[in-house]
Amino acid sequence: MKMNLQIFERKLHSLVVFHSFYEQPLFKTLLLCLQSGTEDEFVCRYSRLCALIYAQGANLSDLVYDLVVNDENFYVLKKGSGEAVSLSMEDSLVRELDLLQQIHDLKSDDLLEAFSPTIELAKWDNTPRDLKAEYRKRIGELSKKGYGMFARYHMFGMDENGLFPIQHPDGQLLSQLTGYERERSLLLKNTLAFLQGMKANNALLYGDAGTGKSSTIKAIVNEYHPDGLRLVEIKKSQIALLPSLIESLADNPLKFILFIDDLSFQTGDDEFVALKNILEGGSVASNHNVVVYATSNRRHLVKENFADRNGSEIHRNDAIQETASLAARFGLTITFSKPAKDLYLEIVRSYAKQYGLRLDEDELLIKAEGFALRNNGRSPRTARQFVEHEKILETVE
Image (cartoon, rainbow, N blue to C red; front, side, top):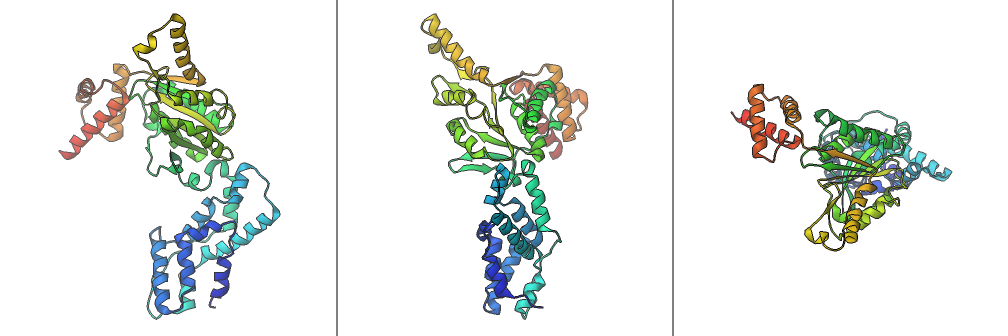
């Protein structure tokens, strides 16, 4: 039996909870297709609809499912923040999910039968599922899976327009890191406590360049983002925006690490005072779903010059206390020192195994030491660069 196009199209215009769907190319093109007045219009618009579906896997049901369960709408925002939802909104949700189920189940043959084109056209695939059951399940998992872009991505940056997803983040895993087990364990335990809703500290990872401070943080997020952990990378120049960012995330059911890499200040920097105030017990300390993790090559975070050492003994002591006070605001400070020779070579062996390097071990270790002497000394970063360099040479032979 042919579908009633007028009623179906009218229903498509009735979405309220999922009102943002009208901005989706898929829905715009479907509506245009239903409004076709001639065969030529239908063939053109239907083929455009198929092209959109094919570009994302050729399965209409999967596309609709993804849009539904990840949509950021006022219903999911209320549920995520723990607010009560009115009965009228619940009724609207059920009605709209029934309609979206029809779109989810819409087959190519339904449209082809309704318009009866005289030429053969492409078709898409469908997958049976219960959208209402799937949506209720996702609502119950908001604290782990999130909604909107937070459901699709787990690392973010920030610009003048707010947060944006990092679509191709560093894929470093904890299992790929060698050495510094104690240091990583301290940060991991703090992060797991944070994920479990327990009291967790803001953390400062201090130490030599290339020792794996940033990699440790990103590897932890890569490991635990299925449990609701997300990372937002903040530039030093954006520190003043932290209070508004924290406020915008306050009702989000996920847990966020605000990550400041390579943190250091000049004497008198406005950002120094701003970060100190944030860590002192204001916005961050009172928020249940945000911690600050920072890395630095400087123990006290402030670049000191000879001018800072002039003046009276009292002045010098005040300056030292001021610079030390910011580092003390981090409840957890973890030191990553340059590795000794044995640890460096252990890291080299680990990377060589991961990359499948075929070098004899004696030759590997001799070359690794020489590479370190020529390239900024021993560090996990140097070990990785050495192995990657040798793997390239091995590949092009």
